[in-house]
Image 1 (spheres, rainbow, N blue to C red):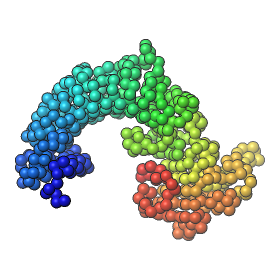
Image 2: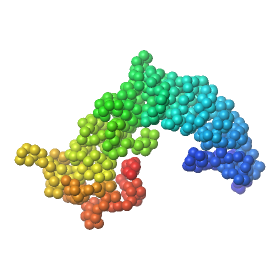
Image 3: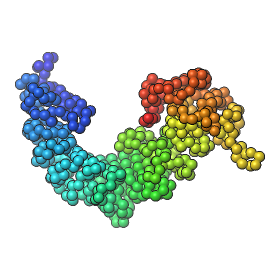
Image 4: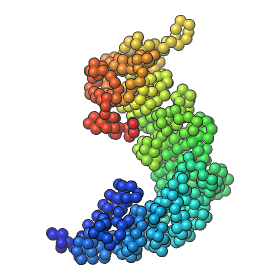
Length: 576
C-alpha cells in the first residue's frame, strides 16, 4: 500500500514511533542539545531542524492527522526557550495527559511559567534545576493541586540544593501519585505525600556541607519517617541515601514497619542510622537489599552493630530465599582497600566502591554484596571472618580479586577454603600475587617449625610438587578450589624478581603442573592479560591447560573473542 493512502490511524501510529525515536536520540546528547525542536522557532522550518514536527509539513493530509492527535503533542522535553513553541504544543495537546521533562536553564524562565496552569492534566513531571535558578517558579509549581500526576521528579545539585520551604506537596491533592524522586531537595518527612506511593527515592549527597542543607531531613524525628513508611504499604522501591534522621525514634505506635510488596531497598548513610531503620523493617524474602554504610568511628566498631541485624534477616526462616544483598562499609580515615563480597564474587579493591560496581544507582546483579572501604586484611581479618561466617560463601562460584592488599597467602586460604564450588577466578593487579601463590601452589606456602620451635616459611623456589593424598595446613588432600576451571591473571607485573617468595610465574607454572599431574585437576582455560612474560614462559603455560590466551596489549574488557565460562560476563567489573 502506498504511504500516501495510509489510513489516518496507521499514519498517526507511525508519527508516534517517530516522536519516540526523536526523544531517544535526543537523550544521547548533552542536556543543552536535548530535543532540538523545543529550543528553536516552530515556524522557521527552512533554517531550523524541527525534529519530528517536520513531517507535518509534508502535505495537508499528514498535517491534519498530526493536529487531530493531541497525544502527539503531549510530551515536552529538554531545555526549552521558545514560548511560541511551548504555547503551540500545549494548545495542540488540548486535554491530553502531559509528560513534561524539563532541564531548567537560564533562558527558560518564561517557559516554566507556562506549566503551572496545566498541572491539572499533567501525568509526569520531571524538573532538573542544576543551579537553582528558578526556586520561586518551582515552589509555584509544586504548591498547586495535581490530580492527574503519577510521576514527580525534582532534581537539584549538590552545590545548589533546592529549598522548597514548608509547603505541602501539591496541597496534598495528588491522589494518583505513584513515583516520587527527590534529589538534593531537603524537606521535612511530614510534608512528603503518602498513601499510594509505589516508588520513593530521596537522595542527599553525604560529601556536601552547606549551612542548613539536609537539616530539615536529618534533624527530623525518626517517628515522622516511620509514619511515612507505615502509611505507604504499597511501596515496591525505597531508596533513602544520606537522609536518615539522626534522632532515634521513641516508638509510639509501631515497632515494626510492614512493607509486603517491597522488591528493592537501598539505604545509604551511617551504620547506626541504617541499623535503627533495619531493626524495624519487615520485608518479603524476595527483597533486594543495598546498604551503603559510613562508619562514624572505627570500621569494626560501628559496623558490628549492623552486621548482626543483616545476618539475622538472612538467617531467619522467612528470609532463607533472600535473592540479593548489597552493603558498603566506608571508613573515611583510610581508603587502602575495598572489599566486595557476593554469592558469586569476592572482590577486594584498592579504590572506593563506585556506583557502576552495583550497576548504577546501587542496582547490581549479584546475590550477596558486602563492600568495605578502608579494610586491610591484616588489620580487620576478624571482621572479615565474621562477615564470611554470616554469608553463604561456601556457595561461591566466581571469585575476583582486584589490587588486593598483598598479605600472607595463608590468610586468603583460611578465609576462602570453604569455597569448594568456585569454578572461575580473576586476579587483577600486582597486589594480588600472594593470593595467586596460595591459589596455585598451596603446598608452597606451607609452614613448618624450625629447630627453635618458630614457624619458618618454605621458599617457593625450593618447594616440590605435593603428592596425592598428602595433607597440608592449607589445603588437605588436594588443591584449594578443586573445581576451578578458569583462571584470569591481569597486570601481575610488579617487581617480581625481588619478591621474597620468588617470581610469580615460576609459582604459577609449578602450581598448574601440580594441579594437572598430582591432583588430576587441570585448568580448562588460562587467560593472561598485560603480564609481561616471555614467549618461552607462555609456551610452557600453554602446555599445562586446555585453552590458553596471552594478551599484553588488549584490556580484559576489550577482549570479546575469548570463550568465557557460562554466566561469567566479565564478572561485571570495570577492571581498569
